[in-house]
Image 1 (cartoon, rainbow, N blue to C red):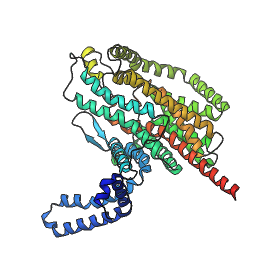
Image 2 (tube, rainbow, N blue to C red):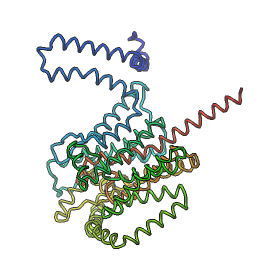
Image 3 (cartoon, rainbow, N blue to C red):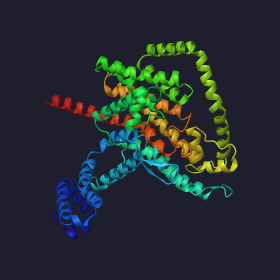
Length: 494
């Protein structure tokens, strides 16, 4: 490839085209050339290079090959994020009580590669027109604004500590990168098999996560996890997503084998039993899951929904004393303190109504104004209001309203198809309703840095990734419908 300097000066777009052509046709040769060069360097100077340096240099070709492959296959990103967040416990220490988990770093890297690919290969950063664009990008922008706003207009009497601004920066990153995982899922997934792989990964992690959850009650299971050091991130809304994916796939996909359906329903059953009957005092563990399950079954069959309600009532009557005791315990431990925290949050919010106190900002106000009763709100809506103000809350709520509405429309559109896409669409729509409920019970969609912390990104990303699949499914359905229409038109022409 030759480059005419005068031509490029006259037409700058030509340079971008040349770079694009070079990347597509010569990248493999560049990797091979670099590999040979590194091998020669290591061979000629092996005695003068420390072993650790030699190893580091030797893996450069592998990294280049991986980079070249990955930039051309970004649709694998949601799969990689699910696995990294679920079963790979890697993190980077921040020097504070918080850590930066590998899934967060991967989202930053993937978004960077996505932008780089758009610039190099597509010559522009183009955002597809989607109904969620305005509220989502408005929310992400307001998060950044609130950091500056909260810092500039902070009450001078408020006491902060040395790591406070670092934590705010980390919280800002998390609050922006979680929506980015949604964008990755909704814009990069273009094949049904990717969606199936994601569902299967959640099912496998559901089996594995249940064993991990009960490891302390079974000696052999405890020995296994203790010896291997394996784990799974099964906190937050993990149970809800496992349940709705299993039940939706079993109920909506008519092509599924009966034994596979039984296995899916059994897995959903053990999780519901564990959360609702054994661990009922943790309301977030079962209320969003049961709500989503109810929505899912209502979408499938009104008769089945009535049977579900009847079954819950029967179990409730049989276990009435146990349920009363468990709920009373939860009310004593969390209910009253939660109400106090909400009252304190609303009192504070009145003074910072427009753009809030910034990400993680209200913690300093609580420690200054209410040092003896400093409490987190345990409510995502109030969290967002306190941190980003009324504009942040409006954009945040509008985004979830759009996702729920578009999910419902897609469910209606695919009704009766009896395939995997109909199953997953209904699962995600039901999960969206579950997320909306869960946000009233805690910071389950946007973690507060001084409660769940940055490490919660590992399991909170599950929800954002699957919410994005609504729009990936819509894109796939539109594409397949267009291809089908073109084929029919071609046959008519003949």
